[in-house]
Image 1 (cartoon, rainbow over the protein chains, first blue to last red):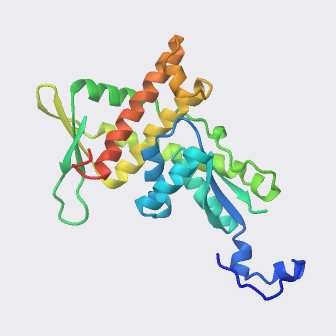
Image 2: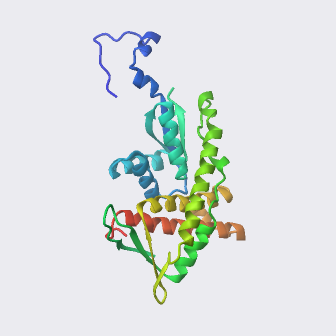
Image 3: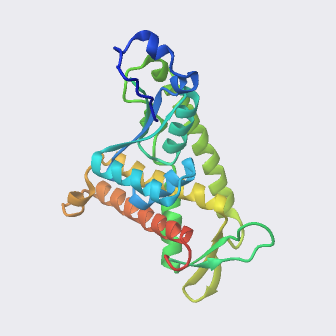
Length: 102
Length: 164
């Protein structure tokens, strides 16, 4: 997500947060996949491709991040969409949750 | 078991065809018979404390229960279809999967894999393979490994005959 840069950055205020476009403000939920020792790496890649429609490279990148860093943020979405993705991923047996983007 | 190619189809992608031995048919049926292994209350919608997300926990469990019921019905119908495993030669059988069947079969196999892992206490797998197991652990580990074996072959077929 790109941001514009002002010549002099004013302090972050509540007013500024409220000026964030509604679409972005609503997309305040993260879909996170967590590592476990049981799901096969090729299976996780396949699930990411199927659920998100990602190309293989992108799916593998996230799979490797889960494997090496312990988790990967797969999407930042509205409540409903994040919940939909979490249900889909859990249906495939992945350890995926939705978390509020603080 | 190996992937041998796609069946010709008039419209849309053809079904994927697999060849397997009598022993592999028995293993596959044995693993599928274990479905479902995971309890719906194993699923967690969040690790955080946000109230509005916590409130959705029951819905997730209900959705997973419903999904398992649907998969079970599909599996029973699939396995009860006459000639599902076509006997072609001594110790050689064939069966075919559409793309849709492939997706739910992968989920079923993974449910058995993950469910067996949960039942033996979510261990790290590599050390477990080298330790003396109880009979229960050995059964669970066998089912877990066999599920993974079939998953790998199905996923290999998604990449085409060269990768399988």
